[in-house]
Length: 61
Image 1 (cartoon, rainbow, N blue to C red):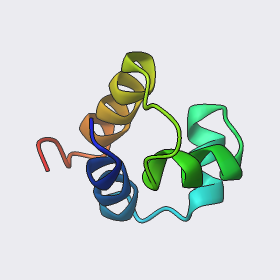
Image 2 (cartoon, rainbow, N blue to C red):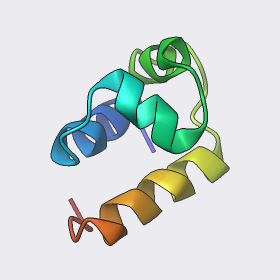
Image 3 (cartoon, one colour):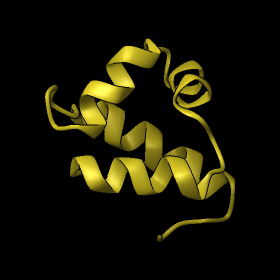
């Protein structure tokens, strides 16, 4: 998952960074860093995002 895909997923879910962070169990700062490409998006994070999208009926984007 690329930083842009993460941001698109968050926006598709209608979440602010803090709400996405809460769903993923990370900090809001960490979500921002991942969206800017400053921190790696780990496979488990990408999988969690996919699960959120599937649950919301928004997979695939």
